[in-house]
Length: 390
Image (cartoon, rainbow, N blue to C red; front, side):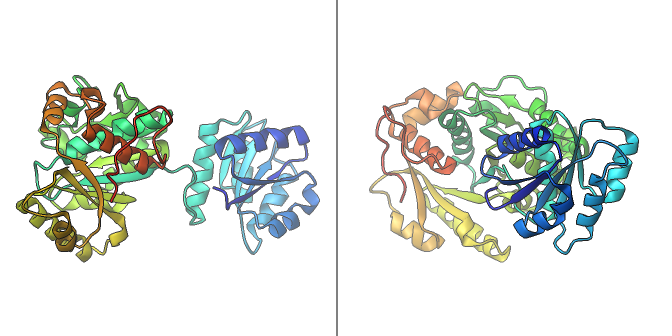
């Protein structure tokens, strides 16, 4: 998080460098100030307007504890992380009494540092560093291709970004979820219901262990198979799972049910953007108009909504201009109609690019995935993408 300043307070310069290196690994854009003279640390932290102080404390009688106590009483109290080379129960209690927020041990683990900083960011009302982007895929009518689009997007984002933990998909269609079919997942050990059941003790490693990985690198939390598991999934528990996914993966996709009620509304709440999918058939357009009205009643900002016209073709009975006018949103993206590729992909459990990488529908969805991931134009050497963004 580029606009967050952190002061590292440790009398040992080598320890200071280790802490700063760990912070840089967590976020290369952090502004970090090294403070080795603890006597002037309070003033240095105040003058630099640091929001977080990382303080080295190695003994219950360490003078650094007085620094933490002084920071606790300062006008603009920063969040305090203690880093120790000699942790003990006595030292931990002393640090907590002095006013520290988080306690870490040397050598610093990046994942533990991320948890500590993100916890402090939340306490200070700051956006959580390293958070991913949540994209909800929603259609107001069944059969318009929302699940197909969600599955293709999560796979293409993983392929295009080529990073660990690039993308994941949560299938919220609890009773009839079919993401496993579109991604050819034949077996899985855990579902969304398992993650929700364990929401109180879920952390990033546990979440990743619950995911089923697709060959593209994308991860999936499928809908549960058994009806008796549905009770584990409620809005509160799902919210915990979704927010942890956001902290763990760069891009989180939600395949939402059509009905606008509890779980769907929670998904819409946590989403940074909503792909509102319709096709060029009157019932689909009519339901999309009604959905936008409901979103307005729920006080969602229109800028959060992205209208995607699926199965687009020229010369239909309804024009694109009519769709945009009646829905009340500009058209964000067009996905062209190609029944041959779509049927082949669906029956084989393939993405469009796997079924026919040279098709226009594959080019459009890949371009949309790159746009969502903020990757811009196609990489050199790839076929030029069509202008499907409107």
